[in-house]
Length: 509
Image (tube, rainbow, N blue to C red; front, side, top):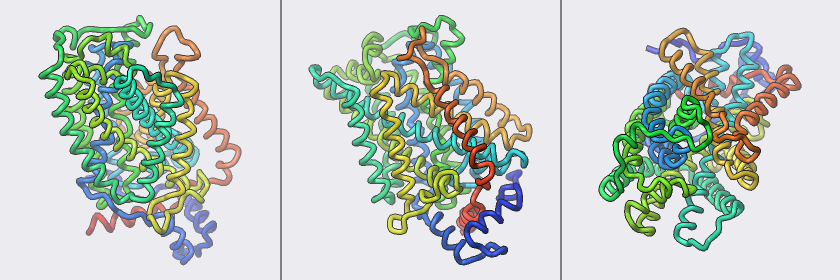
């Protein structure tokens, strides 16, 4: 039984009165104007079934595919040894994270997720400032995660073109235009055909499993086999980090990229039928299944890697692995093309989740409330969709400035989301072992996400995730003292109550 008896955030009674006052409500809080405003901010359609949100969460992790993206990078920090044994740190830690987050999601299945729970569980005297900081960290992290996913897609396409046309010289602006094209197409799909997305994610989830079988079969049958000593015990520190402890932990970070962002399903909660049950189960079960798939595929990748120098020479290491195994550029490219469908589904989900978080943060008054409304025709928050897409597009311009932008952006998103998990779990911590383990893992692994990946540290290869993240904290702190401390009253309780009442009705149906 859940240990939290109430679904309404604690806090000053003035929180409710302020929202009523700004909405023109009567003291009872039942004015027609408030009902209209609440409806305009919550009238999304519940388009996800139990099965569809499960496959959304399953595909969203993109676990074994993410390992394929990082398998070559592992040789720069830790090598195969870190990639294999790191799972025994990442998986238990992630399961503790998702168990803690799932419990909160079962109580309050709402798009704002982490910052809403922080408001609910934080000490009363620090409730609003902690929520304010948490909201900005979570929101910016999701923008970074979305940009990082676009980066992966752009680089996969560029690599495939380079392999097929050896005379082609890839330019950073070519990759940027590819990213922008994909971003625009998927954003339009989010606006005009959102009802298709649950079915697309369901199909992508099935493909996620089918392609695992295909890749495993092809590589195990045709690939050049390495020894067990190579797979389980070899180390490689090409980055310049000669300290094995640091190098090993930096190698572990590569695994976490396939297991961060599981809260994406929660940000879709208000569009899920019976979300109190469906969303927590979808998250937890998807992590369990993806853990098995990712670990098994990691072993297969390393056994049938082919020439290590080919993997290191490629920008996207999985391409030479499948081409060397099949002996055909066409066959290898076809496999990667099918693989990319699941990555596109991840990007589609990233846009949806980040836009819902933008929508929630806006209707709670942190971002302009103009972005906090649902379009009456399409029944999606169109304004928040396009402002989040615009900010992602701006962030992608980093590709023109640095060759390691993708690593910085993904590290930034990972570090930020780890902070959001840490804050939310910390606020509800009552000494339970799973919550404590989740916080220890989050703090430990999160620390290494901001370490420089290469030595010596130069301006080109510096990991800028930490200074950018510090900038987000400074922004949140400055805006808190300059404006929010006196003007921002916390969650929009009218919307909060409407969302949870709707979730209660759905659970009883």
